[in-house]
Amino acid sequence: MSAVQLADGELNYRLDGPVDAPVLVLSNSLGTDLHMWDAQIPAFAEHFRVLRYDTRGHGQSLVAEGPYSIEQNGRDVLALLDALHIERAAFCGLSMGGLIGQWLAINAPARIQRLVLCNTAAKIGSPEVWNPRIETVLRDGQAAMLALRDASIARWFTPEFAQAQPALVEPVVGMLAATSPQGYAANCAAVRDADFREQVAGIVAPTLIVCGTADAVTTPEHGRFMQEHIRGAELVEFHAAHLSNVEAGELFTRRVLDFLTA
Image (cartoon, rainbow, N blue to C red; front, side, top):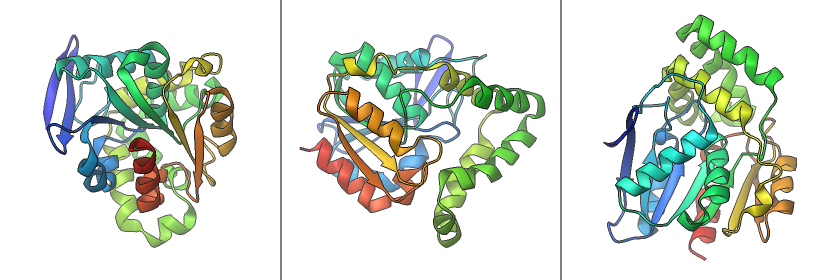
């Protein structure tokens, strides 16, 4: 693990794969860290220099005072790329990571070669969903994170997968329990306030949209909205809930690689 110094703290990152390969950036979902992509790394690192990082407020990255914004998280990625002297990269983000990818593709198009938007939407949820969660987490701290961990199993995975694959589910939901309550609440506000419905049509990078057929958070309808508005965007659906990279596993990895190496 390494870190880049930002103005207000350190951003934790990790590099895998050949030094001279093209760069692929992976961006985690709300309440996870860079290890949410562990299953993809062996295959991705055969073709790419894979750059994973912990979004601010998560993992080993800085926890600054909130609220955060998706723009702020996007600028963190640009600072990371600049620090590592990376001009252009492919970008794959899931959920909140997908919002960050949208911001980058809209506001820094010269930096994004190809874009994969997984289990995300141009707008995720409403203040009625996010504000009570922010309030609870800031009030109850770690106890709230443990309660969210238990509730997240049903949101992040289908019941049959959660039951059959506890060894895959437990480490991922464990990331949520370990996330800083302050960092989590600050990023909830970032997701709450992001709305790219009027801007996604400006995305010019070749784009793949990944949906989970059982995703109640960012539904296939949300994916189809983005596909209709992003010129030439491809869409694929997997039998999965919100974390399709974990639940669809090898199918996810193969389809994303096919797109990125096309």
